[in-house]
Structure formats: C-alpha cells, structure tokens
Image (cartoon, rainbow, N blue to C red):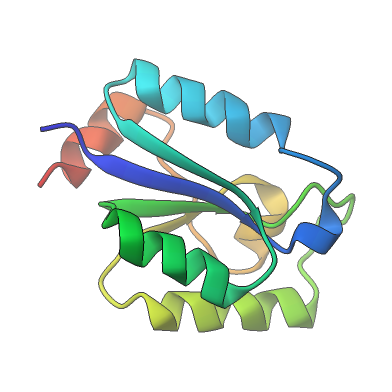
Length: 120
C-alpha cells in the first residue's frame, strides 16, 4: 500500500499562490509511489490539523508560505510547535529553509527510501 502524505503551507498570508516548490515535491512524491493530498495554503493550525484528520496520512510535509525570509519569525515557530503538538505521533517534515528554521526536519532526499519507511 502506498503511503499517503499531506502537503500544505501554513500561513496563507505569506504567499500569493501555490508554492512551486510544494507542487514539484508533490509530483516527485507521486512518481516515487506515494499517494499525495495537496492541501495548498492554509490560514491556520486548525485548518492544517483538520485536513490531516480527514486524510489520515502517514506524514505531513509543511511549507511556511513563499516568504523571502530565511529565518522563521517567533510567531511562525510558535505556530509550527502548536501544529506538531496537535498531531502527536505523526511525522511532520518541513519544506525549505524557512520551515527548517522553525524546527522541522527535511524530508530525506532519497524519496524512495523515505516512503518505504512511511509505509503502514
């Protein structure tokens, strides 16, 4: 069974549209055999948690909008911490430097191996 992943961006006020990086990752994950649910830009922790609850994924890949900052603000770090606490036991990965500066690990570069580890 292919692992299901949810991809979403937290903080729709920081982005003008879908992140090209998130769309490219969605395609790569599908090509590697994952089932991908692309949630797009979400305005709140509750919205992201809601799609995760509905979709029951093996993992969440989170971007923090397409902002130009390379360091997460204290508010972004707090939102990410709140989201991770809301989803106990679910692996949450960050997309890009901004998400990683907020404390999220990157999805391993070897997607095939990463997806094999997420299979249920």
